[in-house]
Length: 461
View 1 (cartoon, one colour):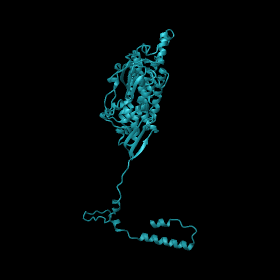
View 2: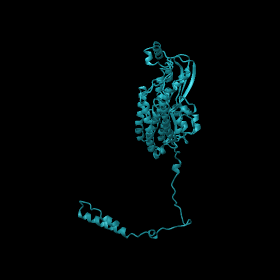
View 3: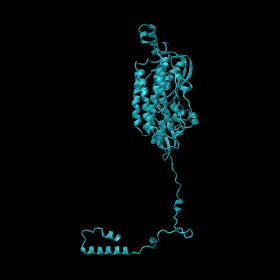
View 4: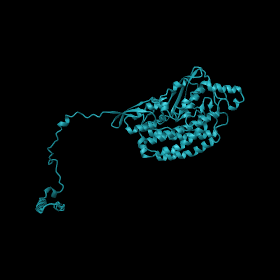
C-alpha cells in the first residue's frame, strides 16, 4: 500500500527524460524493499502476558540531579485595587485585595472618599435646617433617614404627633423599604450577570418615585418627614393609586423570582458565598438583613415598635445559612411583608391633622397666617431662628431598609444641636467584607459587595 501511494505522487514538472527515468526506477526499488520486508513476529503473536518474575523493568532512569539543585518554587501574593472607579463598587469604594492567583487572601476597604463632614455641618444649623442633610446620607432610603432624625428631635421636645401623621410615616417608610430593596436586589443580580430583572423592577420603582414626588414635590431629597409630623397631607387620589399598585406588584415579584431564584447560575454564584455565623454578625455589629440572614430574628419594628408598627401584622423573614443567597431571599420576602403593611395602613389610616398644633415647632396653616398676626410671627421665627430644644441627649434608632439607622442627638438648650452622631448600618457591613471574602475567588468579591447593600453617602457621611 505504501508503494502504491508513492507511485500516485505527481511527477516533477520540467524534468529531463533521463533524470525522470532514474527517479522512477529509484522509487520502484524503494517500494519493492518495503513490500518485501519481513513482518515482525510480535505482530502475529497477538497480546501476550508475563508473570512478575519474567518482567524486567526498564534500566533507564532520568537524571534528576539538575532538578534537585533548583530552588523551591514560591507563589508570591500580589495586590490589586478594586475601585474606586469599578462599576461594581456601588459608589466610591476602594478595596485593596491581596490575591494568590485568583484566591482572595485579604480585603482591605478604604473609606472616606465621599466624606463631607455632615455631622459637623449639622452643629451649625437649626434643628429644622439640619433635616435635608439626612436625605443625602442614604440617598436610596430618604424618608427613613428623616424619620430617625425627626423621632430623635421629638423625643427631646417631648412632643407627640397626630395619629394620621404616624400612619403616613409608616406608609411612606414601607414604600421606601421597597424602593431600597428593588435597587439592592436588582443591581446585585446585574453585577452577577443578569440584566432582565433590573429592567423589569425599575419600571415599578419609577411608579414609587412618582408617589414620592406627589407627596413632597421631589423624587429624591423629599424633606417630607419633619419634627412634629409631616410637611403636608396626602394629595387626593394618592391612597387609591398606592392601593392599585400594591395589588399588582406581587405578580411582578413572582416574575422576578421565577427567573432568578432557581436559576442554577445565580444559585452557584451566591450559595455558600460570603457566609456569616450569627455570632460573627453580632460581634461585628451587623443589623438588618445581614443579621437576620444568619437566623437571628431581630427587627426593631417588632422588638421595639415605633410609629404604628405595634398595630401591624407582619412576619420577620430570617435565613438559615447566612450566605449571599439567604440575604437575597430575605430582601425579596421583606418586600412582600412591606406590601402587607402598606395595605393595612391604607385600611386603617384615620382622618385628622398631619402635624402638631404647637406653632413653635410646626408652621401654622396658611389660612391662619392671613388672619392672625401671632401665627405670622410664629411662621417667621420658625424659619429664621428655629425652635429651642430643652437640654438633654437621646439615641433614637429605627429599622431602616439597610439595618439599624441611629441618631445620637445632644442638646444644650439652644436652637442648634450641640452634637449629632449618626450610626449608619453600612459602615459595619463594609467592615466585615474582609471576613466574608477570604479564601473566595476574585469574581466572588462582586457578589459579596452587592449583598451588603452599601451606599457611601451614609458610610462616609
